[in-house]
Length: 313
Length: 263
Image (cartoon, rainbow over all chains, first blue to last red; front, side):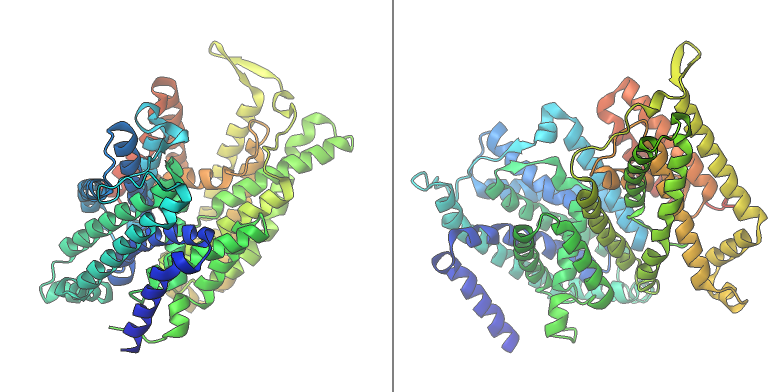
């Protein structure tokens, strides 16, 4: 009950943010929302099913490039259509990739997903005519629910309609993921994580469920990717690079992968910390590396693990 | 050998490259005859191995945890080393004057090859032979192989696991730093070196098979030939081809081409 109250209070605070906070802070929330959605997917794999993907950035980049390709190449500006296309494309890509990856667990799963991520990166980087190569592709301002909001400048658009659109999408994604995690399917995934042999013995189709989790995670990753690309206005190949996947896992661990809301907390904390540290020193990677090392060694349960030590069901 | 996938190996390589440049520039400035620069490179690489034990000490904290955490800790090291290099050597590429051609060129089969390339190839072969000899013909090598095979058993038989791990890791660091130092006359040291090299090293290790020395050697040949071949014929697929092979190997023979053939 308290937990739910806190979550609702946080949601209300986020809804009021554009009225209370300066525009810069509000624009910082946008990538945090985008990463939040992508991390919900990543955490279905890691926190729920026990599979650590080091190639989740593939799907984030896929979403970003879908937004870029549709707006600049095909003149599709409806953001609903973009999100739907990104989700569909991610599912299509995730089927063959997932079928291969879920045959393995642990480190082999991580390596295989990393290899696929890098495969996609080199495709984005080298096929200049199709993807813009290292310059990437521009993302034009999309229509939200069919409305262009032409009267607003860029900041006004991002901190106004687009902010609420992203927040609504995040809320939808969170609710959808909650349904998934709490369903019998989610329960089966947790059983597989704890003991795959036992799960198989009581009739859980281990590989098939892992595969479903992989595809769902991919869809969440791509939806997050579309949101990520609009504020920056650019989709570039580094989105698919392995260090980006590493950062995603970092955010998840920072928030706490054992908690359902860990991904959202991690995304928020990461973005604001990054902004803070970058404003203080040019060597923010060093600070973040040290921070990650500390989290991994001393606080593997992340920020939420500090506040709420037991594992909620 | 240690069953740790170290993402930071690329950082050691880059660190070796940067230090190599500084050491050689310094030595040449102090009147070292140019042809001796190779020795300086190797020495600076070996000297850098001192960072091995402290890093290993840090990684020890997660030996017993899930591999995912080991992977993440080495990722943290990658981030930190990258900024250390940025701090010390700046963001501009660092290059070694004209040491590359000090040894002259050689005409081989119609094309000219800088002799230095041959030196590096020879050094690679020597290291491979040396490692093979170390692992198969020395007491230390036997202990390392036994530990890799079954750590509880070798601990029960009186092997000091901590010392073995510290030494193996330091040896790995030394190979990385010397390797980085050796390429530097032919190329420039750049900030992105570490994270670019590690994916190639990753490809090599996967193709060859984790924990197999012979596999690593063959894997590096495959990756090198594949890269050169792709650049010569269809440059767009250079990296693509490598990852296709990596995925193929992981899917068909996840333990690598040389599984079971480890010395």
